[in-house]
Structures are given as structure tokens and as C-alpha cells.
Length: 303
Image 1 (cartoon, rainbow, N blue to C red):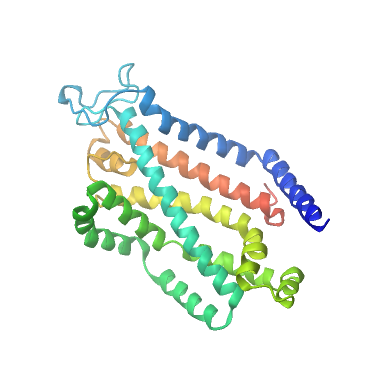
Image 2 (spheres, rainbow, N blue to C red):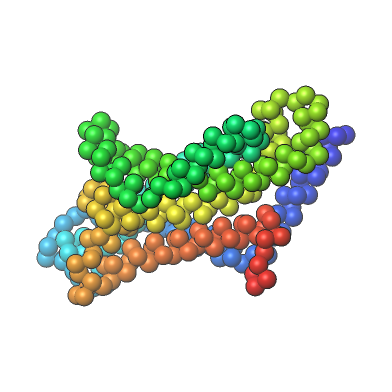
């Protein structure tokens, strides 16, 4: 009977979350835009068969047309093909880096908030240390120092991918750790956790069955916001010439290549810039909507 009651209670909670999701227009619009972008990136290169790497100087800087819907760049490469292929790389980096930062931040926050004491002191001072570091200069330094060695070990594209993901994820977990720690500190004082401790439940069991399910909403919101941050940082690295090699058309790299042609062919910058803007805006609105759905007490008066 107790198991049935727990299941019914959980189903009731999930149904309330579902009703809030359906009613929140920000979540619906953001999910629709992200779904459309994802489908375009996944299926677009299959349907639109232009090779993004083909160079044809006779087709250089052509305006949008039926043959080239988004025009061509200075090398005569089709912009639509490049934006579709580049989206795969940019979003893969963003989602993987967000997974790394969210996982590390959740691990640190849960340990710090639940065990407290010297665990809390050490982990929070480590978090403060990373927060004090200037992120972008340190990212540039790490990529500059290690990109050549990783290229030799695992190849140019995979090496840069691993380095960028680890660098972004390893330098952006601190806000997640602080959020999760604060939530765990509140949960630790609630009756159901105190009862589990009094009954002699193992700490791992308490964390897995009682703590993590109750911070899952917060982690989800933090993960969505981390995706937007990772897209911006990866694009910045590529724009500065320290990201992927020139033959890998990431959105940031396309902006970097377009900077010398803004006056004569602004469309080659508007396409990747618009993709970055639309994706980051949708992800951020999705994060805000999910925050209000999971915790309606945080809803702003104008929402």
C-alpha cells in the first residue's frame, strides 16, 4: 500500500508539472524553435546535398538565390550547407560541455551540502577559487597550450572537440554547484531526510532516493542555461581563431571568416550570427520557463 501511495503521489506531481509546461508559452515556443533547429541540423545535410567543403572561386560571395538559398562565402562555399553541418558541431560541443559542467557542479554541490563540515569548507573554497579565475583568458590559454599535442594524439577534429568540451565544462560548473548546495542544505533539514537518517539509511541511499530526485528540476534548469553559455563560449573561441580548424564550419568559425566581408556581403555574417542568437535565446527562455514550472514561487509578476 505504501508503494502504491508513493507512485500515485509521484504521478500526481508529474501531472501538475505537465500542466504547467503546457500552459507556459515560453517553454512551448522555445521547445518548438529548438526542435525545428535540431531537425534541420540532423536532416538538412541529408536533404540538401550540397558539399559544405567544395571550393569554387567562380561562385565567390554570391547573394542568396534559388541555387544557393543563403548565398556563398569568399571561397564559393554554400552557406546553407555550412550552417547545417556547423550546427552539428556547435550543438554537440554545447550539449556535451553542458553535461560536463552540470555533472561536476551537481557532484560538488551535493557532497558539499549534504555532508557539510570540512567537506563543505574544502569544496566551497575550491568553487570560490574557480570563480575568481578569469574564464575567457584561461580558456584561451588552455586551448593554445594543449591543442597541438591533442591533435597529434587523437586527430585534429576530435582533439579540439575534447579540449574545448573539457575546458568549457571544467570552467563553468561553479554556479551549478552553488545552486545545488543551497537546495541540498534546505532538503537536509526536512523531516523525510531526517527520518531516513534516524532509521540508519546509508548516505548513498539517502542521496539517490531522497536528495537527487528533489533537486532534479533545479539541475534541469541549470543544464539548459549551461547549454546557452557553452554555445557562446565555443563561438567566441572559434571567432578568435582558437577553436576548430578552418575546414570545420562551426557557427563561430563562420563569423570569424565573415568579418572581412561585412561591408560587401553582410549576409554571410548574419546567417551564423542569427543561428547563434536564436539558439541561445530559445535555450535561455526555456531555462526561465522550466524554472517557473518547477518552482512557481520564483515566477516574476510579469510572467
